[in-house]
Amino acid sequence: MTLSDAEIERYARHLMLAEVGGPGQRRLKAARVALVGMGGVGGPAGLDLAAAGVGTLRLIDPDLVSLSNLQRQVQFATADVGRPKVEAAAERLTALNPHLTIETRPVALTPANARDLLAGCEVVIDGTDDFGTRLAVNAACLALGVPLVSGAIGRWTGQVGVFTGRPCWACLTPEPPPEAETCARVGVVGALAGIVGSLCALETVKLITGAGQPLTGRLMILDGLTGAARTVRVGADPACKACG
Image 1 (cartoon, rainbow, N blue to C red):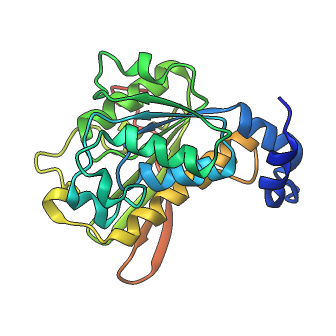
Image 2 (image 1 turned 90 degrees about the vertical axis):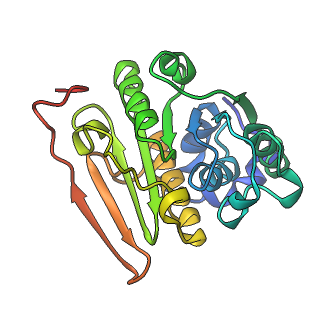
């Protein structure tokens, strides 16, 4: 996997980093990353990964862009309202970086199709706000041996974690709560989505290039109201139905 002259200029600031350099940038170019949900978390994550030079992005989302999305889903414009999210996002991402390959999957991820949708990817980012979907993504990543980067937002709080086997995401949240706090139900401050999405992209870049210490088995929790952040370790649940 080689870099063209245009790519060398585009990624010059990455190439200067000892932790990335030419080998890391070539690994980014060769990588395929799945983004499950092209909303408030997946959209900003996709923009950052496109800019970083991840070679192939697989966009998975069945929804259409709505006006209420634009408060936090900065990958879309007003003119995109009513369009499939994966279609509008693919257009924006290729405009940002024409060296990308974009794979669109305008379907809902379910336990039945999750493995097929995520097969062949080096990393999966889950930015959905549906617990059933999250459990299906987690199970598929375990079966495929693919690292899962999980990002979630609600009200003024965000969280990011990385799961590579045990503990898995289901150790953290084994069962969907009866009253799931989705953004539509409880609201969310728009700027928080960009922060969490970018952190998901950062963890993905670290996983692909081998740089630093990813949040493997840990959860970073952000409090937007106070500006505080803390990182906690996720314990493996011996009775976990997914990885126990």
